[in-house]
Amino acid sequence: MTEVRWPRHERALEAARRAGADAVLATHISTVTWLTGYAAPIGIGPVPWGHTPLAILAPGEAPVLIVPEDDVEGAAATGSEVLSYPGYGIGPLDPMGHLERVLEAAVAGRVVATEPAFLPALLAQRLTWVDASADLSRARAVKDPDELVKIRASVRVADAGQQAVREHAAPGTSELGLWRHVAAAMERAAGGPIPWVADLVSRPGMDRWEGPPGPRLMSEGELVIADLSPRRDGYWADSCSTIAVGVPTPTARAMHRRILDRLEQAIAAVKPGVVAGDLDALVRDGLNYPHHSGHGIGASFHEEPRIVPAWPTVLEPGMVLALEPGWYGEGEGVRLEWIVLVTSDGCEVLSDHRLDL
Image 1 (cartoon, one colour):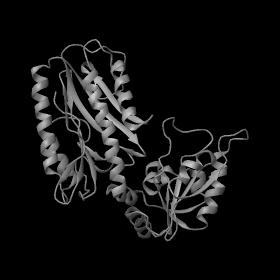
Image 2 (image 1 turned 45 degrees about the vertical axis):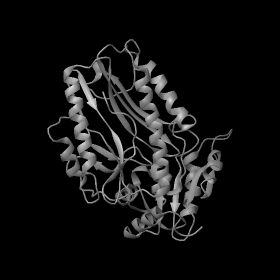
Image 3 (image 1 turned 135 degrees about the vertical axis):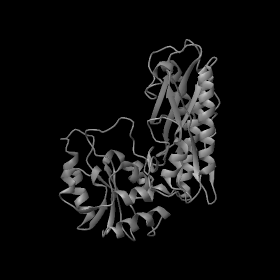
Image 4 (image 1 turned 90 degrees about the horizontal axis):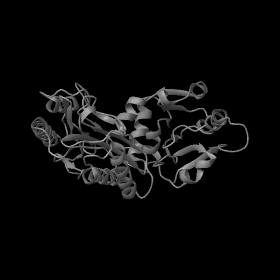
């Protein structure tokens, strides 16, 4: 393997050079995916017999993945070199001890640029490291072509979930009953079970504007906010629609039109050179919502650039943004979200789900 498999490898190595390090040690699970393409299983959370995967990238060398023995096959499929340690089995569970020995040998005295917030103290005290979290985060913001293929595929999964919301939301249906159809539609589109993050709330929950589906039955005239973020092949999508179950109130119609207009203005404003904080100011003007106006998306469902007040990141071609203005009040709420890819002269809308009320 050559030194640079993907353009992002050179960006990561440049971050290490700026930090005065010899190599990159990725400890955030999303940075590991970004460097290697390895989509670690995350659906069940931490497991007692293994740590989340780590990745090492050094000049002129293949990426190295460090995983429990149980995950060797999936890690090897990425083309990376794989180092493993005992995982699930009948012996004592000592994942940190096993990992410590493998990692120390793999680093072999190098200074590594890493993400210390995700580096256990036991490992940190045995390594020579520098904090490159901010540089690595910025480097991840511009997507390579293979990443865009995966993001587009995840967006299609989100679109399928949004279509199911429209097909199955009805008076007398519970939020959980609706969610059953939405989750099934996304899994069919993805080709199997997938991790996801989701809000599915109906009218009385609108002032809190987010939350999981519950047993509450939806009634005629209520609004439903469906914010769906599926992960497929290690990369995330994001999407949000607000629909009326029956005939919406005049206030809901007016605010939906206002939020849709603002989203369209934001999309029209996206181009290289725009400052993230300025884009937030454009979207947020005159609206009162307690969250970001958008965010980057990729191997993590929230990453650079953040579209929040005064954020200094400058948009570049290859960045992928989820834009999501909202309004919440009077027991109702509206939020709409589409994903766009920053191009050389503007942006391309990747989402295809409907936004009408």
